Length: 174
Image (cartoon, rainbow, N blue to C red; front, top):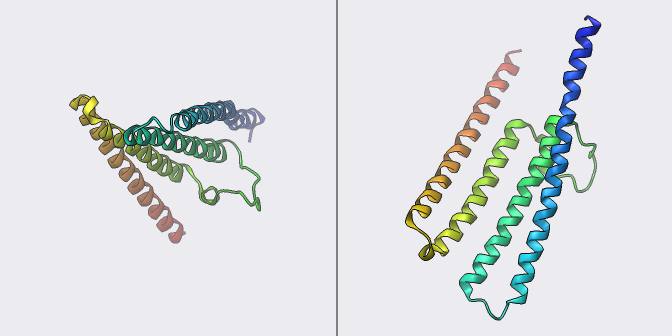
């Protein structure tokens, strides 16, 4: 191979490191969610005797929402870095997530879609609890959007399954 082509290919391969600052930025965003969680939790604790059941439930659902978004961020940060930038040297680490051992772009997309459905479900539940204060169009569009998330996640999972079966069949033939 010509040295110029080899240098170009090495440069292109090295460009994956441009994503590392993006993952660092997501870690900062996760820190902001931790602060937001603690602020909301302190409000819940401070107002413990003054909140009705509905308001308490809405605050707790907000806390769950923050946790689910933080989980989504972890999947993107760790899974994305491992898939697109560099392997993480975690072999034998007692806290290594189980899913990390078989992560690839397809698995990551399905996990992210599933996490988005969970987050959407929390938002939809909050909307239904608070339905009397919301316009019917808002409720309708949130339900439609949630349904679209469900269909999209199903189609991604189905596509990933078909692609994996095709790869298995091709591997068997060779």
